[in-house]
Length: 152
Image 1 (tube, rainbow, N blue to C red):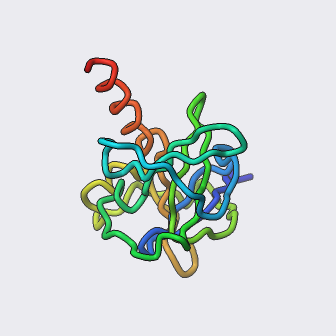
Image 2 (image 1 turned 90 degrees about the horizontal axis):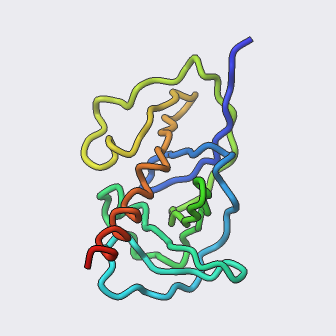
């Protein structure tokens, strides 16, 4: 019997992404954010999630994609990776999909730039390509930012 995995899916600039459903804490509508002065562009701000302060990363900026002017329509995919909780700002949330491991492939050659570094691989589905996001790589930018603050 073939192994399968489940992914929470979402869209960013018409690209179809997925993260392991086990890493997703919740999906919520766009939240008011407190901006963080002097922070990197990918950090959209901080949100209060039932008393927990969570950093919101703009996935468009993290992937070096063009900005979206319709910010209030975006969604937060809240990810828990170990002790870290972070919100990924995405354009639209899809479904949870289950895919067979045997159809997993390395990142496509057509993928370049930041996107290539942040993708574990892809699944060729019926009508689209599911790009699997490497959550550890995506949120690594937060670790680098906190290390710079400690040095300063």
